[in-house]
Length: 331
Image (cartoon, rainbow, N blue to C red; front, side, top):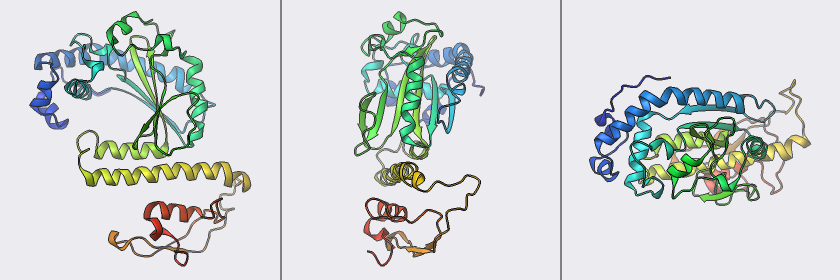
């Protein structure tokens, strides 16, 4: 685990987190309050959180050997990111954080421990959901009262032997996504973000679990680095992020089509990865404004037609470039 200085460097915080003095002042926490939170977190909570995170991952994720995980990870929230989150939430008058005190901040932050589970295929989510709800009872009577965060925390069972869902499981989806969560999760339609969120009470703290596909993760990592939370007003960067998001969504749909339709019809022997013959080169044309010239490529993807009559190559080309992405001779 990284070592952190025992004193908050406010200049570093403002520079790295793009925080102005006005935003910090709007949080209604003094610089002394922020120092108190930072110091308590670094001195008294980081080691405990790290130990709890390791125990949680080992007990509930590593042990799930039969689930279709691609990979998983866990982390404890960085102290500077914690202070930045508190400032931003309170400066925008987020109701959830309105009653927070410098002495009880940890009762309000539900992602001090975070775990992420990555899937190859989106439809495998239900197996993960059933696994989590088998260990963490999903009882609405035990959910956090968003108007009384501290009292909800104080009234809860703090034993690690009785973990439970502290908030309703949520599916963040994009409009137009397949409707596969409606019967089991609360669905929130976002413009771009896709992920399943579970907030659990585990001992003294809350744990947030995110479940998403590899395609969603790739987009999320790029979007977080480029846009979140400092450049969301940059229309050019937002446009590129939107384009990448559409490609990620198409990747999920194409992989599902491969697994559900193509693979059952043409099973590939794992010992013979070249059983699918390589196809002749095709030429795809993109818009001249992007400086894209005709390119030849070879593909091991079978060129059988999809139910709509388009090959996977055509689907991707049209997704990226509209009619200009159609194979030459068919446009």
